[in-house]
Length: 121
Image 1 (cartoon, rainbow, N blue to C red):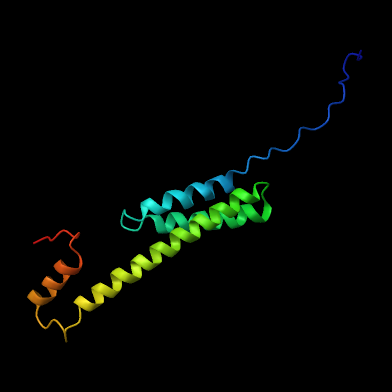
Image 2 (tube, rainbow, N blue to C red):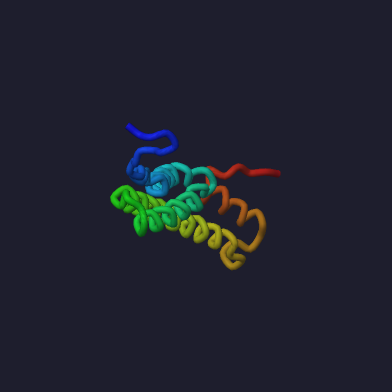
């Protein structure tokens, strides 16, 4: 029984171990891979996922989830980097004026190398 005006002692609540940054890193790393098809939108997503994963692994309680997020983000960045390198290499080939001296030849090269690109007149 407590006297009026006094409270009983209660221990402080345990800190929450939610690990939101680790989960966000994993989600961004996984979602970044299919988002690469949307004009490279997956690259900034994976970069953000990598940063969050590194921060979460350094100070968060869910280290395994954070490491998985970093791995997924790294994989997405690697695949995106290879795709960007491949596309830029093909674009540079089509822009070579030694191989394709006029606009019509360069346009044919672009149509041949990038059949998925929409031609606007």
